[in-house]
Length: 460
Image (cartoon, rainbow, N blue to C red; front, side):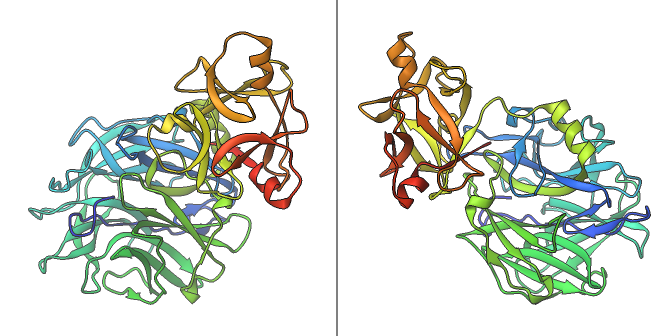
């Protein structure tokens, strides 16, 4: 969720346990098959001026859990039709039978005063289609909410637990749990975690060396609690708090290729930004901030849920929904900044910003040489990035050979990092696209700083 703590209550909890299938293992915020090799992220979208406010279910995929490809052009794959007609805080769980269930808060927009005893639910065999849409009632309390639901399998009970945020009798936020076998009816609502102060946005990692870890938001920081059981009331806080500004919505994800855990957190403003911390030892309760060069959130994504999937599911999702027809370019040495046009001038600015389409580009065959590339604006499709007196600006294509040459670049291995990209000018071949004072231009490149200025990640 995204309202300040004094105005909002939203808590949920993700949890996991091994599948019944032989060879299954527990990984971070989702139960993973032994064959899992990728991830799916569920989210909704907002932006600075709410230009990108969309409260449907959005999906993105990733092979490493750090760099994401939005599906369906970053548009929703399904939208609620009941309740508030919109969702927040979507969560994906692979059930014991191998199919998926999707849960989400019944809330559209930012009307924090709205209360509901329901959440949105969909069933899905493969996340390519969604069936059985319904509202699910979690409790009978009045004048409170049912926000940020997340679910887990409790093997000891033989039931799923659904965790969510509500206000207790003392008037502060706690994590509640209601139990279900089918995500159609629930029973036994009770307090799952109440340390005596407001706690929201919980996320559970089950069975790491016999310990279950719950991360939650407290006063803009992300804090951990732990327990050797899943018994309500058994978790005790233990970890060092982490934050980047006001941070919420913790999501713990375990690498599928190493013993590294990643803790995702979302800033709680409409223009939210995800930050990531890493740890190789959950028991230590300490986290190290991850370099922003190493991760990229889906455009305008908010309050995500992340779950492991197989390589087949990853490929099928891309086939069904498609990767974006546009790209964004992230700066290497200022990884919080992206290439964009502003006032028809090229520059790099800190994400997020509106109009967000200013940073979306179609990398088309070069206008002067099809083996090169030209940068076509998504929101001004008759205009391209071109250099003029060595400065980059967004101009309409006038059809001349001079314009075509100015707007054409050759993509090369990144001058500062070969896994990234640099762009050499077609008609000034000793010069590369780089930023200087955050403005884009083409210059000769010789120093280490200039090589970093001229290096970009082509992603989404």
